[in-house]
Image (cartoon, rainbow, N blue to C red; front, side, top):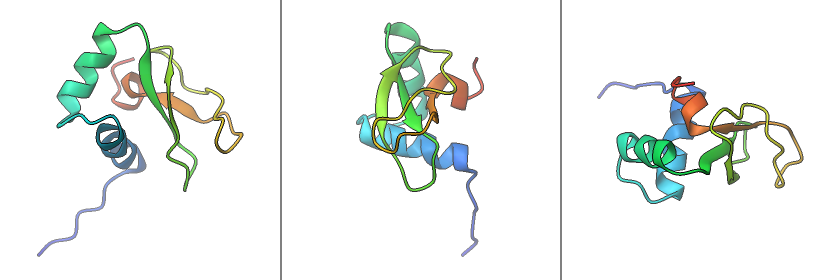
Length: 80
């Protein structure tokens, strides 16, 4: 069995899919493109707080940990 190390971005994208009940990343990205609010997740290690943010958000305020680390799924995926 091989060990595959996922980047922090990939881990957070997978976490966002799980928390928002999407079966795969494609469905999450499509929903983000079609809706006015875009799912975002905190990039602080140990914090997986999610919120709806602007699609181009890369430094949103996290109400859970107090940092400015909320990043939209579109930025995480490299689409913006």
